[in-house]
Amino acid sequence: MHSIETLLNKLQSPKKIWVTTHYKPDGDAVGSVMALCLYLKKKGHEVYPVFPNEIPYFLDWIPGLEHALNFEAEPKLVEQKLQQCDLICCLDFNDISRVKYLEPLLAAAQQEKLLIDHHMYATPVFEYSLSDEHKSSTCELVYDFINLDKGNALIDTDIAACLYTGAMTDSGSFRFPSTSASLHRMIADLMDKGLKHSPIHEKVYDSWTEQRMRFVGYVLKDKMEIIKDCQAGLICLSQKDLDDYQLNSSDTEGLVNYPLSIEGILFSTLIIERKDGVKLSFRSKGNVDVNFFARQYFNGGGHFNASGGQSSQSFTETILCFKQKLYEFHAPNKQLKK
Ligand code: 5GP
Ligand code: MN
Image (cartoon, rainbow, N blue to C red; front, side):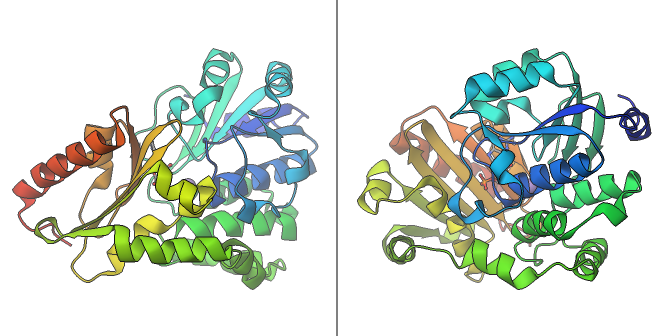
């Protein structure tokens, strides 16, 4: 591992830089990739923002996306740009398997790699790393990167909008414990630079279809199970549930948070049957380590209070297995400590 300063020195001359993030990119993934790309472009570099698959509709307004590549749509072009580049930047993930179908290309690439990320347990495959699990978001770390590069004055309203989007979405609109005084100072700086925050919140959170809203009603009424013994909430959605409401894959975003709004519920899980396998999302409050749970039982990871994983078993078997593990996990804790 080399120091970030060594990299910043190398970046004094123009480079070709390929930047990517995890599969099914969220607000922090898209915001951090585009903020870094817009900044590096202003510094005179050639940049190739690459997403492993499509971007959710509520993020399609993010500045600079017209120049971004989608690996599923244009695999050859993505590969060609990867071969041409001098540096690879990996944002908002630290385990190469999270880029899914892009993994073989990325793993084989010989160029130096920079990691900018806030997940736990980074794999040691990066030459440079700006990684801090205590930060709210990768966007907060991209802001730190820009400041380390003494580039704060280059932050314009487009870069500010990208950074704000990731910080807002990953911090639950600035309410999760990862929201720090320094994050608020970053937001104040972005507002001083002309950031308009309200339209961003509206574009991300007030752009639902009627179908999506009705689906949430159905889920909360008929699909949410409360397992009082384990202070847990569980929502399981089959492929048929999704098809019946003609949802797209980003319409289930945020569902996992609802059970945590019930007093006494400290552990929430969403299990979804998707065409490419069964996906699990975990959220918790306080001392409940869902990162451990995701890594131990569902080949996953993430953060202490927000993690994800997957299962190669059927949907029904996964639910049974999950419940068994939940009781095992809960037993030594007796009462999950907040
Ligand atoms: P979500 O539940 O929203 O998909 O993900 C919650 C958090 O866990 C995110 O920070 C995400 O990056 C991480 N995460 C989700 N799925 C996986 C996974 O399969 N493996 C790992 N290592 N992290 C995951
Ligand atoms: Mn993130």
